Amino acid sequence: MSVSPGSEFDQNSVQTLAMKDVSFAYPNTGFALDIPQFELSSGERVFLRGPSGSGKTTFLSLATGLLEAHSGIISIAGRAMPKRASKRDAVRADSIGIIHQQFNLLPYLDTLSNVLMPLAFGRNGGSRDSLSAARDLLGRLGVPSSLHAASARNLSVGQQQRVAIARALLGQPALVVADEPTSALDVETRDAFLDVLFACVKEAGSTLLMVSHDPVIGERFERAVDLRDVAKISFGASQ
Image (cartoon, rainbow, N blue to C red; front, side):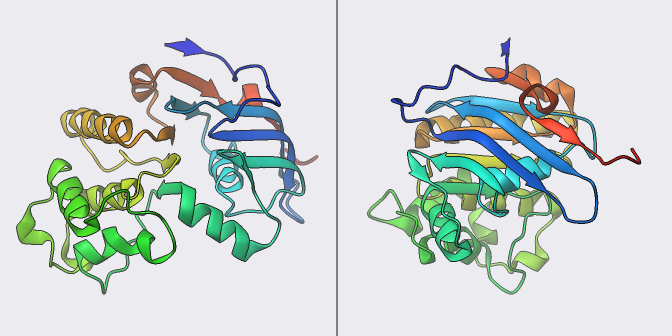
C-alpha cells in the first residue's frame, strides 16, 4: 500500500476522477475547503481518511456533484462536472454509484426496485437483463432471494447496507464512492463485506473511493490518502 496525495496531474490523460484548483465554502460558518489537485485512475481502490469534522463528506459531495464547487474543475471519466444542478444529477446518474452512510433507500419500495432505481435515471444496466444482474449482485452480497420482494423498511441495517451497495454497483459506474459503509458491521462481517465489495468493483471495472473512520480498513486499499494532504481546510478565525 502506498500513501500519497495522488499522481502528477496530466492534462492529456483521462482519469476517473480529476479535481483541479477546486474551492468551496459554507456561508456564515468559516469552513472552507481548497483542493489544488486530486486524481483517481481507472480501477484504483483509494481510502480517504481524516478526523471527524475535517470535511471528508464535503469532499465526497464535491466529487460527486452533490455540491457545486465555487471555482475549479471537476471531471468524471473526462466529463466536466456542469454548474447546473440538473446536469450534475445526470452525470451522477450515468457515471457514479454512491453508498451513503445512511443508505438512502426508499422505504416504500421493495429490495429489487431500490437496486434497479439508478437505471430509471439513465445509468446503463451493463447487461441485457438488468433484473438478472440485480439479483446476482444481491446474491453475491448475501441478500437472499426471499428478501427481494420485501419492503426496504423491513430489512435489517446490515441488509439495507448490502442493498445500497448493489444499487451503487448496478450498471458498472465509472466511480463508486462509499461514505462510512462498514460503520454498522462487526470486524468479521466487515472483512467479508470488503472482500465482496472489492470483487464486485473489480468485475465492474469501477474505481472505488471510500471514506471511513476505521484506520484498519485503509490497510486493505492500494492507496491511502489523508484529506489534509490533498486539501487546505479552514474552520474560520474562531477555530
